[in-house]
Length: 519
Image (tube, rainbow, N blue to C red; front, side, top):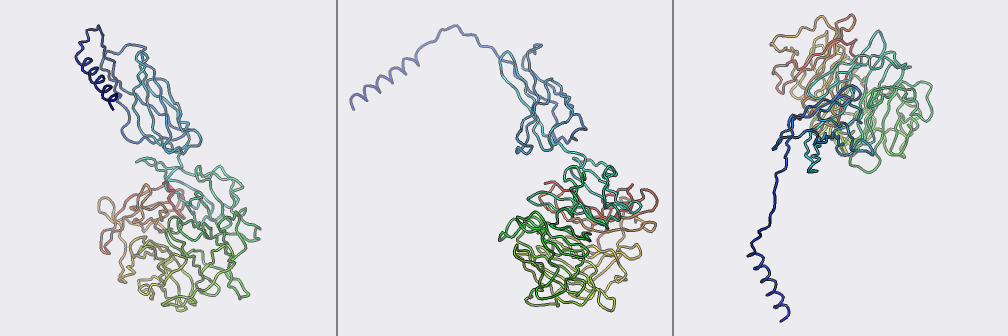
């Protein structure tokens, strides 16, 4: 203990002596040149790969007079989240002013300018954000009928700007170009799929470039190519929560029902049959399921409509199931064997996901059938949405759409669009007002489709949910490139004003539209 005290006293005396010492040394202190970098973009810069040249002229501000030849400049693009592969840092310039032709992998980057003072060896740095895309990265895909054959256009979106791209498939010899029917986008954890369906077949398109090649024909996904193979509907289910039977894909054709369950690379034997029944049946070209079933929901059921026997059936999705079934329904509102003709169906986000089916009885009247609670591989029938629809000329309608969030049914008769409130059973004609408050006259056009786009990323996507509230109308004025696309704001109130959001022209006859999403 005595020794520790002695050490402590010596240490304290040393500190005191040094604190009293007057350093009279001869030292020279010099300020270094401090640099601030201005003139860099202050918002996200969006550029096209293999098209755009990135030009940036920075302004360097010095605290001391800048000497010539004392600085070294390096421009570096650093990939965010390392999504571009093994590399994540790319040198794109060695001059003060950047002039770089974009040849980077697609993705988001932080672009840094590093200024090295060669005398002091101090590096000064500033950056901006950049996204590298291609012209087909994101936007509206518009499927058109040009003299009976497929034409695919795109309203490409980059930043706050839009670019019209025509005839995306013009360079490809698609074997099934006759009679375009629909274009489908499925986003799953295992990869995005863009599927083009026609009267004679179906194929994938490259999810990035929208290119086509022979191997993309959907028939090659079959274990045995059927003699007749004309797909009519397809969906990929990949929910985040469930028992492990997912993901799976469901494919409908004009004659069969196919399913590709988890771990399988090809579609299995057809399942359009009921165990114990000898005959198979055909189904309507629509898959009734949760609107969130593709991404992030709990094991939604798949309900189909058997058009031969006029009944609803549920498709078995487990790996060991080989057929459909007529499920028992608690608190039955309507019989699953309806005896009615299929007309139309829609999946929505109502009350956490509801689906609506319109059927025609033997007298020609239309009936609404509602399904809800579409999760955990089960469902319920909605008692408030089972009734005969009483609306002007609706029995003659061939085009329908159901709002994704409001309980509104839209239909077209004699080129007039009607709105029908499914909750209050009220209706009105849909007069669309332009930016000047004037009614848009559609009498000289043929309305070719109406729909609401289902955004699979929903509120997490770039557009949010706003676009799901808007009705999309395709029409054709006739002649070459007389096709029109109008996007219309639908108010929450039944009697509210219906206004034009955006309008696009110059298409062939529009058949379908879907938004190519990005997370």
